[in-house]
Amino acid sequence: MLYFTSDTHFYCKKPPFIGKHLFQSCEEKNEYIIRQWNSVVKPEDEVYLLGDVSDGTGEQTNEILKRLNGTKYLVIGNNDKYLKDSQFDQSLYVWTKQYYELRTLNTKFALFHFPIEVWVGYDNDRAHLHGHLHSLKATREPIRRYEVGVDSHDGKPVSIEEIWESIKDFHNKNDKLNYI
Image 1: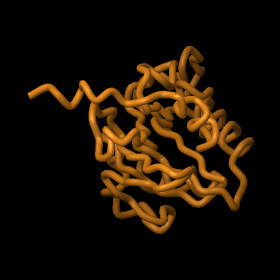
Image 2: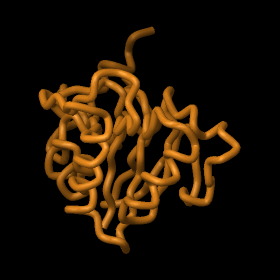
Image 3: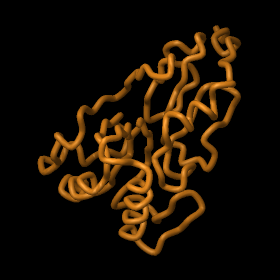
């Protein structure tokens, strides 16, 4: 199965919260996300992390990623500083990219950490998956844009089937393209 998540912020530098849930410590938050993740993701599954995985060091991030089920791909977020740490094991990800287009369920999904207004294939009803906003609600508009962050999913990665079920009846409005 395919799963998506973002904004886990392991070893958080801000108050440790997920959605409306405030934790006593970053360690408590880390353990909660690990339990939530492994409750849905099996070792043979694939997970696309759409940025802001860890605020910790490379070594700390290695330890966390090794405890998480699934094969991992990273679309880099604005807080993924651990990637520059020489102690970080790059092989824990199949790849790291700034942006990626995934073809599945007979459509293309534009994967990017940040929400964007218009993406490649927008006018063909292609979808956009993102993080960054820390929103409690995964969908915002009647367009095919979906936030995969832990705040909207109680710390769990969300499956492509659940995402598709939420946005399949939405249609991107061509009037967004007429802004010139």
